[in-house]
Image (tube, rainbow, N blue to C red; front, side):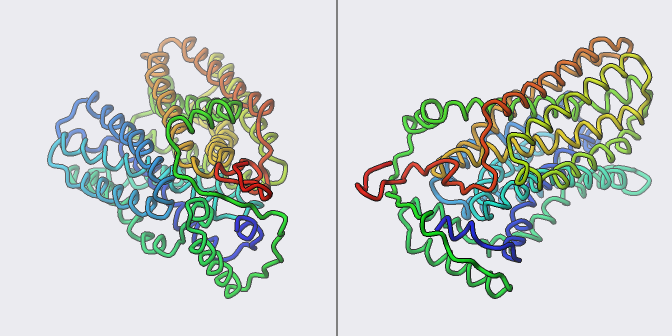
Length: 471
């Protein structure tokens, strides 16, 4: 059945998977951008520290959601979870727009974060298992990159909604919180028509249902004009489903069987998360403290930054399937680091202004964004199917925790904007960390391009044909 899925041509069915599931990252980018503008601060009587804590509450919710729903998506299935997590997000974000006070807002932000954290695990798993192997890299990378479309759209919306000349101050930020739920409601019906992963069904003792699901997908592809080639019978595998995925099995998978891959995944996720959080959450401080840009105008500089981050995965994703994962990850991480090193020198030499510094950011993160998206792709495809959701959740949580250090550290380096040396060394450190991630990927990366997921990592339930014993 995996071979039958991988041989399918690209059709409207696969577009429905992309649009139905890819909305998650748009919603996350939108949520982060809305909160970063803190339009609710005055309305709810919050201090600057309490506004910052609102973002932290959302991130904590993501961590709890990833850990909770990562395990459930492996136990209960991809489809159930990507419906449940979207509903949780819709409720949390929608109610946030009705918040009468700070505490109600925090509860809603935590709930919305849980939904998005769960989305990351269920969606990445489903996409990788439903998309044919020769398209998997570019599709996954492009979808992960759409986070920046949400951030871009959120910045545009904030320019209008948070301007008291356009919308009343106590209304604008509430309307902003409704944007995500409206987008979510518009695609929830589409998700109802996306099938459960046949791979998941097969490894959970539901072979007949998996067979029917693949038959229905193939029939839909034929109706849409797709020409389906003969299946390669040599790709057939036998599985003997077992429901024993406790701590001992997980330890064996992540430490003993695939220890090098665990190092690879942790390195890629932590390095990109640190750099992104360092720059993304402090870019406004750099613009205001060093270049004298007003806080109201920082969103204008954010728009090209977000556009560069969006275009990187869209334009470079194809090459992760053709040139290869390992080479492209090394290239994108390294180029991003080198450009950031150049910007550090120019920043310290005081030859940049707000526009030219933003251009450096745009170029660096054009490449870094593709590499960061590839980090999520990597951790979702290099571990066995039975623990894929949990693998994504664990690496996501570690990356979030490591990334949370960066804004505090770089905020301290920025200070009052009078001394450029501390931030210069901060940029150098961020660049070196990113280059280090690229080198690790080059040395121990996995050449997973155009390979079936089962060729990248054997299912834990795979058995040998001769003996019927676990392989």
